[in-house]
Image 1 (tube, rainbow, N blue to C red):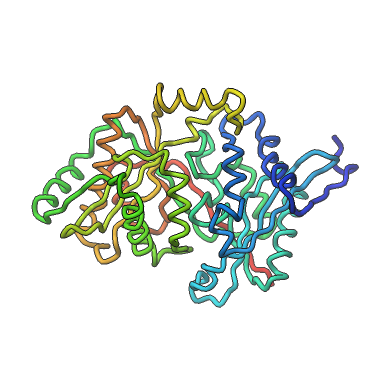
Image 2 (image 1 turned 90 degrees about the horizontal axis):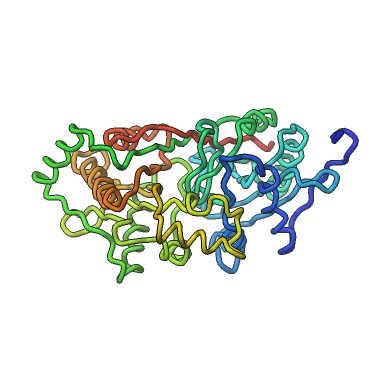
Length: 388
């Protein structure tokens, strides 16, 4: 097709039909890409439904779909997250930072230009002075642009993108704000002897305790996770606290996927102060279903989950309260929760897990992950651009 002779257009989505078309874009773009796994359509529609996702109570969101000659060629969102604006997400810069996300586009600079300028104009009209992303929709959802590690599919709740995206964004004036690292962890491998010795000694001398989550007390246990998360990550770049509504939303979405050995708490004097959460890698389970469970996709999904079993997972949360950061006890707590979850899942046949994500400059956390055998294998990048 001669692109120059066919008009490129972008339309803002306003209806359920528009939203369905919005989710068709990556299905068109990645139809022949073996490393892209289509998310379940019903789950994505629910994620974008203000009646279900509490993010919309604290944010303003718009989305657009680009087409050329009736063919879908791209999409983007723009968001203003009031929690981060009110909480000083700009880290003293005085900037009002809006977000973009869900970026998908064919390898064409004009498509990227149209999508980016459309989102930027929308943010600028609402007083934003800087744009940052991608966030789909928040930093606690899928976020960052894949810039290294294109040779394998993304894990659950992680983004995928082909290599040309970074160059196309940079053509539009975007520059690196921060990188985050995903680690590949061989669950079946023996623990590094030095880390094992350190943990064993620390458990004896520091009197640390570890326990699995109590599934009969899920609201209480999620409260512990929320408390640890909001304390442990509060000083991190881009931090957005988890609210009570966020935790209820997570409970609905994750409760069917969790087993008692998926979550481990580290305790000091009986109080949970560290946590590790390992999710089953649902992308392994839904690969090849093309985002749909009907008519027979649900049978394949059930067989993969209940009969064959999954061989991969994602350690999505691992944190220790800030009062223990930089201490021997804090390091031991982190290693201990990882070790307990790893040991449980190794017995269940898990082969590997992704530990993600970790800020590139969070060196203490990176050292802990690497001490236990994690290997960096994917890098995701946040980009930003002034809107003046």
